[in-house]
Amino acid sequence: MLLGTLHLALIAPHDIHLYLILRKAHMYLALLLSGTFLMHVSAALFHGLIRKDGVFSSMASGGEAAKADRSKRRASVT
Picture 1 (cartoon, rainbow, N blue to C red):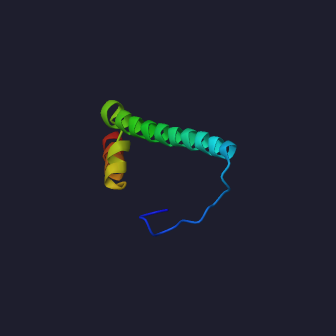
Picture 2: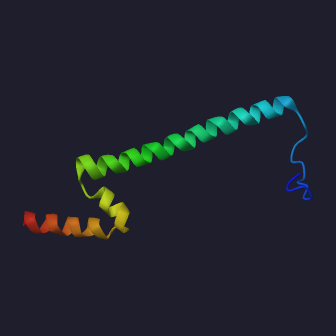
Picture 3: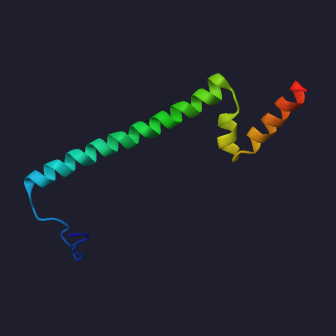
């Protein structure tokens, strides 16, 4: 029941074993999603603060900064 008058349809029968399986699956998938997010943020910070190779600025500006960095590097090499 939702908000007192709105009833949601059952999507599965009441089963304690199914509940335990789905609860564990939900927990592991939530941990996987959280880990993926943390790894992505860590990689972005690594590229932005340590390597300083233009990857972070490329992500932040939609690719325009990386194009400018590459053109500067090509100009300095020649």
